[in-house]
Length: 156
Length: 146
Image (cartoon, rainbow over all chains, first blue to last red):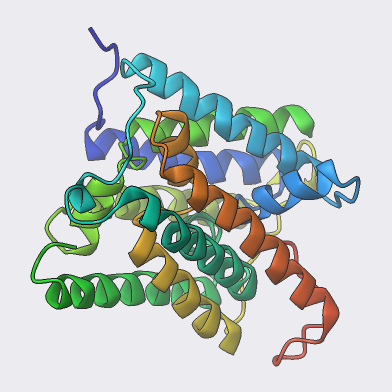
């Protein structure tokens, strides 16, 4: 029996997530961000890291998601996109998903942060640029998703 | 600092996965405006963090490892819009973002692997671009990515 539900109540998960960037600022005076952690993880492998602690943050992310997954009764091998099952070939989805990841990574670097760097930490620090970036992330993703849903007759 | 990075990463990754953000179908319903839960999580996280950071700033908090607290408050730049649209399109097609993508992969979601590979490639490409030429707003080199 899983020790952790698949979705903690929002009023538990949300405030606890909010405490992480506060703790990081309070202890180390550093902003939290995931795309920067990805970057520093690659740069560490290439021997070019400028903020090595972010690579450790990346390692921590993996340990954290694994720990939660185990407590939720996983990991369980699955495709991961049930809503496209049956009408999209999973092999055919691979290049689309790779390109989506590439767009997100490039966009995050261009914008100076991602959903955690701008969306959570930057907005909590009251940066006007972070509010604009986060609003653009959400608005674009919602409009494109609703558009795709319309174009595919409600399947996507 | 390594220890702080590791511990904050563990806490953040654990909570993102415990909130179920690694489930692409769940995020897909959020982007279709059929699932309020992720918005509530996100909103309550910001609402929790914002006043606490404000209080620390007001108290002129001196951090144990990084000196006097200085919040990074991103000024308004055009690239937040351009990069934001680019990110948003990728988010819509993948129904995941950097930390949830890791949660998807490590919970066994095989199709999260090409997303994570794409994220690494895109971040590296974006970093090369930032170092190769000045950005339109006059920022010459990559700012610390967050």
